[in-house]
Amino acid sequence: MPEFLEQLQQLASVYAICGNTVSVMAGMSDTAEELSFRSYDSSEDASYICNLNEKALHTAKASLCDNADWSSFFREVQLAFNSGKVAVQPGNAHRAAGTAAAPVSADSKGLACSMEVHCLSGSGEKRATFVLERTTEDQQKYILESMLQAHHMYNHPKEYEQKLLHIMEAKEIACTKREALDCELVALNDNLTRNKHKQKINNERKEELLKSLGGYSTENTGNPWRAIQEQQQRAAGENNKSWLPSPLGNRTCKDFDLVLFRMIKSRWLSPEQCDACSPANRVVQPFSKEDLAIHVSQLSGSRAAIWKALDSIDSWSYRVFDVQAAMSGDDYLSLSTQTHGGSLLVTMYALLCMHDFLQKFQIDEQIALNWISAVEASYHGNPYHNSMHAADVLQITDFIITRGGLAKRCDLSDIQVFSALLAASIHDFDHPGINNNFHIKTGSYLATLYNDRSVLENLHVSSVFELMKNPAFNILASFSDEQRHEVRETMIEMVLATDMGSHGKYVANLKGKMQEHSSFTQTSEQNLCLAIALKMADISNCGRPLDIYLRWGAKVSDEFYQQGDRERNLGLECSPFMDRLQPSLAKSQIAFMNYIITPFFEQVAELLPDMRFAVGLVEENKAYWANHDDS
Picture 1 (cartoon, one colour):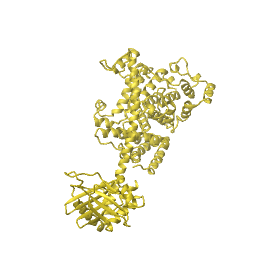
Picture 2: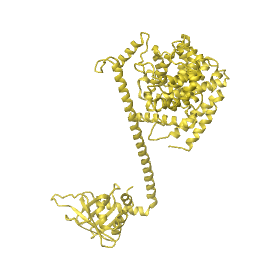
Picture 3: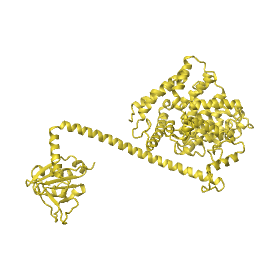
Picture 4: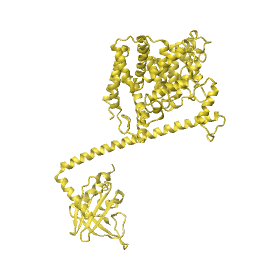
């Protein structure tokens, strides 16, 4: 706070009677930013006032005291009033040096209507003059009320101490709200910048698509996206029954690093294990053991980072952030483009190679790469529900099935594990960054389409199967009708289970099966356990190592606050824990762990004892918030 305001706000109001008819008062103005002089002349029933800011008082300060600081000036003014060294006289048009005045008004005759208040210094050698202008506001009443209030304050100090305490508390709350609004402004500006970046990319993509239509103009009648869809259908041939335009535009696969993918395949498969004539190997040929060693020794940059990250693809501490940054430069802004692929493309392809699913099911490798590319491209650049989250959930699902012991516990077949990987990779396909409740509250098209039941989950799984009607993306083309039906049923069951609105039903179902000592080897029981695995993977952040957990926690909080902003802009009440004006990440995370995560993870640990370590990590992360409360 500037020295002037600090000293001004410490100045108690002072009063003086001049010539038995004029009452004068000096003190802080109502705005608390100016020195206010008020007077009332009872002989003329006239009121006068002036409010002087720091600039207007500089001359008066120099005239009244030798010291240049404001503390000395206000002390001299107070001393003048308390020692009877205040005098008044009618305003003088020819003002001497040391006069402080507000802009001069005039009466109907054009003469200045003012009063001069003179304050003498303690030594009597210096003087400052303040010019008060006539006002219609009753200053007699103001001065009397001020004196009565000062008297009451002097006689009842505790009452005013309480008032001051309440005012200070209100000030603190107001400051907190202001800080929150400042933070919201920064976040909204950041969001605006990101949206402008996305809009630029979308406009560029739109222009590319329009050019690909052969000079199509938006001025023509008709729907340009329908024309694009029809062109893609023609390009794909008569067998393309999908109404969903390719998320890759006029391409069917991302421009991935072939050398990198050959190295990835070589981690688990040798040339001797791969039939070069099989469609499962028609794109990527593995290196020999010797050639792989040479390439590994020469690794640098992004390839080296990805290779190192894949060392932990079968562990609970796999870091998709590192893979994403190595593939596309960062783990947020690039998520809306990823021309050369991102963490989902790398992770899914690596797991397909690790399980050798392409060869086991004779899946055309090009179609598999097309499918992964299209799925990754269909995720939006949301802060949390993006393709990087899909890659993370995919890897954790595989961990639960393999090292977590689910495959052994439930005697899962290869086709069930393959179905689980597909379900995990598409479980948030085309997620718009807002949750089911938002769709339902706003009566969106999707909420109407799916009757308010698992709105987004239905969107995710139905959109993928619609996309797969395009032969270029039909990863199940080599499967029999019976196999396709089994994969589809498993994927639907797993993805719909990720709706947290159905969480209690699945937990109760699992608990009931455990109490019945079920074998968990029947198809319905296996599908239940696969759904539980995907559910656990989807909300596994709270049970991950602290550094990974905090990264995801910040991202989910960012997305929640963006939804809260949209709700506020629509005049809706912000959903719980989504109001950035009332940040409560610690509170929300602890509540989520206590009521959802811990009971659920403990239930899973009864089914899969090898997963009990995750319960301990949840407790460690909960302890972190006990020391880092942000509410």
